[in-house]
Length: 340
Image 1 (tube, rainbow, N blue to C red):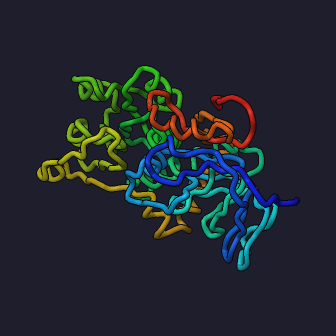
Image 2: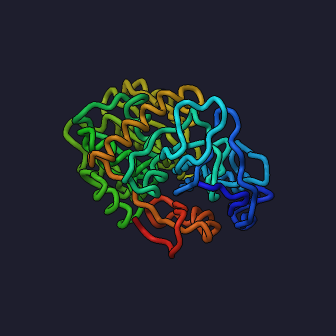
Image 3: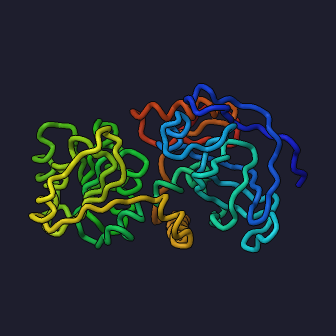
């Protein structure tokens, strides 16, 4: 194929919020050593993308910045030293440090990419790259989840939360989903949760006791933190594990040090960025396993809300609206935003 010299890209000259980003024309980048150039099929936005766009994340990329790190595309050119991919391959990655996905073409580190089975929806695959990796890593690598265990997922309708519900339920766990609205609780039940509770209700722990299995809650997958944090840890069975994935609830909570002793419990941090940067081969193994399960019909792709590239600025702004479950994705096709 003939690769054009120029492309469309959403770019910002500062990190002062989504409103400073606009669709503009930029040169198509050329792949260097160890890189591949892909024609982008879809790119997903997550919570971190919103923080980066507002200059609130610890990573401050150089500007002009093109957002979007969860990328699915087809290889159109390869740089020197690339032996694991060829032109025509369909690939995906998550590359937080460089972004670049909200464009017609993007450069990817060939060592960080995995093959995407033909036939899988690009928007759905883009939407699962970080969230499903994080959830799988939390549940198994860090948490040692076993079939039949009770799992409480807080923030169960968010990206990582809904992934944790799907993956844990698919592994034979008994999942109780904590979500703040009726619509979000329904989404969690549809994703495989056995029960769903309102974790913001005053009596939420009573509802949890009524909903969890007789063996109790062996693991908490917590993307929320905030005021529910200590109560969630107190709800663990003996020997339970409380997985800390984020603080979407706002405040960073504290835990009395006697509680892990009384519970024989563990407080475990989960950082997918550390996994990718320190052990990319393990991250790729997880992605390969997840994509194989999706291709086999054993695991569903996430719900996404897709925008065309020419409305990608709206997609970035939509990150501020957390009332609607689903992942924000830019699909490289025309048409109005759609739910997949």
